[in-house]
Image 1: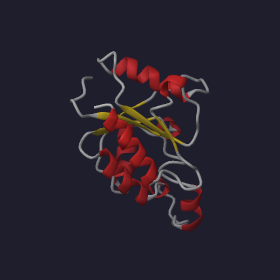
Image 2: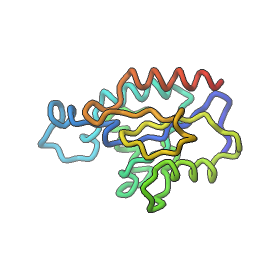
Image 3: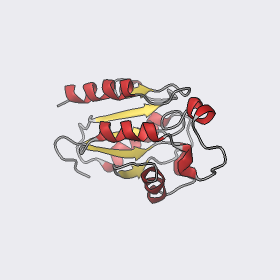
Length: 159
């Protein structure tokens, strides 16, 4: 895959990023058991703004084990997502999500020096070489506009 000049990848976790303890306690409709109701629509608004026209999503969430890429796209679209999921990381049966992301980049990006990506996750099992790309969320509140702002500033430095 060859990305356009300004495009970037967003490796995205769901639980602790697109939803949160706060969302489940205070805003989620507890009677609704559809998957999309587990996604906080506020975070989708912020994600859409962050991605703009240049960002593409690769799902690194454990949701990839129970849903196809197409199903995940549909779930997020039901909450207002306007972006595009282009893939999911493989399950390497290791406890380091960073290795799964590294493998995805090696197998899918033709540019060997590719570095225009960010990682949003509430866990921290990533490689030392990925530390600049990693933006840790708080599972109590999930991803926030401030985290997206920091990630956008990081990407702008890479131009």
